Length: 295
Ligand code: SAM
Picture 1: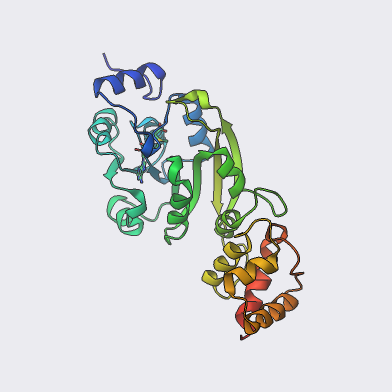
Picture 2: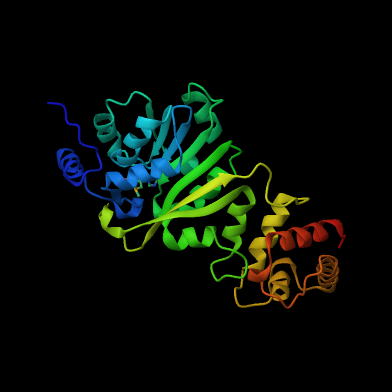
C-alpha cells in the first residue's frame, strides 16, 4: 500500500533516517523539521501557488521540499551533503516538479542555474528554506546581492538573527545586517518555532522571517558599495560614538577629519551619536554627503 504520510511526520522521518543509515552532521547545520503543520504554515506564509517558482536551500530529507512541491510550479533545491542526494531521490520520487542540485549554495551561480532549471523563468520566484544556521547571514547576502529577481524570502533562522534583520533603529538588535537586508526587502517576523519540532533539537530558538522585495531600494544612495561600507563602519565598535567609528574606518589624518566633519554637518548628524540611533534616511544623507564632498 502507498505510504501517504508526510515525510516530516516523526515516524516517517525516523524510518527514512534508519533506511538510509543517515547520521546528522552538526557542522552542516542539520536540524530536520518533524512537524508537518509547521511546514504547511511556512508554505502558507510564503503564499505559494502553481504560478510560483521556488528555490530551497538545504532540503535535508525533503520534508519542506515535499510541501513546496505540492503547491509550487517548480522547486529547485540546493543540498551540499552528498549522502542526502540518494535519500532525496527516494523520498521525492513522486514529485516530478522538483530538481535537486548537489552544490554548496554559496558557490552556486544562481542566475545561470535558475535559467537552466526552471521551465518558465518569467514566473515570480520565492526563496523558502529552513536555513543551515551556521551560514544564515552569508546565504541571505548571497541571494540579495545576486541580482536574482527574488520577490519574497520566507526563511527559518535563529530567532536572534531574525530579530537583528527585522530590527528598528534605536534598538539593541539594530545593526549593519538590518540595514543590508532592509535596503532591499521589507522584513517581518512571521512566527516563532519551538526547538521541540526538530531532530536533533537545536540549542537556540527559531523564527520564520518573511522578506518582501521593495519596488525600489529603501533609500536613494549615490553609491551602494560606499553606503554599505559606511553602515558597516558605523557599527564596528558598538559602544563608541559615530565619530570614533568613522575615524577608525576612514583614517585619523586632518584631511579625513575635515571631510568627515563637513559631511556630517551637511547631513545634519551629530558626530557624538551612536550608529544604532541613525535611521536609514540618515545613513543615506551621510553617505551621499561623503560622496559629494571631495576630500
Ligand atoms: N529542509 C530540511 C528540513 O527543514 O528538515 C533540512 C534543514 S537543515 C536546518 C539545513 C540543510 O542545509 C541540511 O540538509 C544541510 O545539509 C544543508 N546545507 C548545509 N550547508 C549547505 C550549503 N552550503 N549549501 C546547501 N545546503 C547546505
